[in-house]
Length: 508
Ligand code: NAD
Image (cartoon, rainbow, N blue to C red; front, side, top):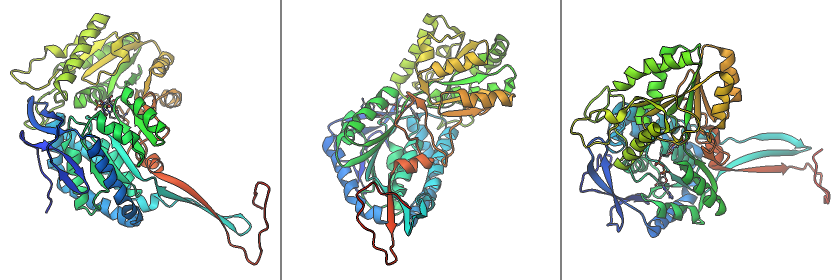
């Protein structure tokens, strides 16, 4: 029988998971965890200090020799059992995501499904670790490569995908034979703890996966501790950049994924209904709190722009918004915290001041007497590239329409933006779509696909200031990030004794 808890209560303290045990000892520093749909406090989360974080790193170090010696096939079997357990607890986990993040329940289920796909990918680890082999690189000399674990890995994750983003990291890292310390977002900390307990139930040894809740103090400890070999980070760009610099300066391999401002180009020949449907989900789903959300629609030509805005307006005004735990069939929930709501509202004020045309004003939407952090869908037209609402990541349900005259100015606009996470083009012209995917300086491209999040067996990552470090997450890059390559060159002489070589050796 599973020992996992199902939901925090107002009096609960959300602690850490270290060495196979939930720690709920009192903490000097705690933060409130709220239900964004009601504004009610659901629990408090402990913020790990340096000593507690060190305890988790020590547990991961101690577990490393045993776990890395488990055969890849047996590590895969733990992942298979974990997958089954997550499926069994699927609904409880999805509800916990909605309760702490606010996204609607169908969206929470979608997030968990995408996370599970990475677990399924990790189940194939014996195949993924096969390496390369060359017979006869020289006379009686063979070469093969080994992919060995890097050691203790750390993951630092954002609030917007409390299940999926940690699941981009730890299943691949563990399957590769590493041990792991996860530092989830303090805003929605319960799901990672739940997942860690399910992994223990699946047979992962104590200490192989630890979860420390916390803030900068825990993160700084992970970044500077000599026992941590690699750090994966997902969050906003300023933090990603500093994590990359500090982690690298301390000799760790680092992949740090940052923020985004994703553009969708709507060509004049696009199917406008398809483009509108795509935009609605991509801009307003999860209240725009997705790093792959479309926040800029680039309409090519005034005719396309007018048609797009006309079709979008009534749909944005009538988005179905509510408490994802109480209603089904919703399109959007609240923002994650009151502070974030105020920040996003501030951007709507700013857009008006900057002279963009406010077509739909989400601030005016009436949510009755709800104390939740709700904002209606917001639509700006005639946004220009010098405005802050165009340049900065808003991370809310705010879509900006930028009008451009032609294809070349579309590419120029998108390529000039500091972020390069995702983009999409809607068109019926295969030639334009093919050219766009070649020309565009963005890591993930959709052709008539509004949110082109790669599947688990491909890798996820942006370009420019959306990613610091060379390797993307999960898929082949995930395996590369969590393994060290070693190449063995072996001679098996048949009665021939090799002499000393004082020149650079070559193979004949
Ligand atoms: P955030 O940068 O505020 O926090 C991310 C993590 O860093 C959290 O665990 C947080 O506790 C920690 N952190 C925050 N401030 C810190 C500091 N000063 N020092 C050390 N650690 C710190 O991000 P968020 O608000 O949780 O998430 C939203 C951001 O994440 C958006 O910018 C979004 O685009 C980005 N994101 C990017 C991707 C991607 O794949 N590129 C995916 C999801 C989210």
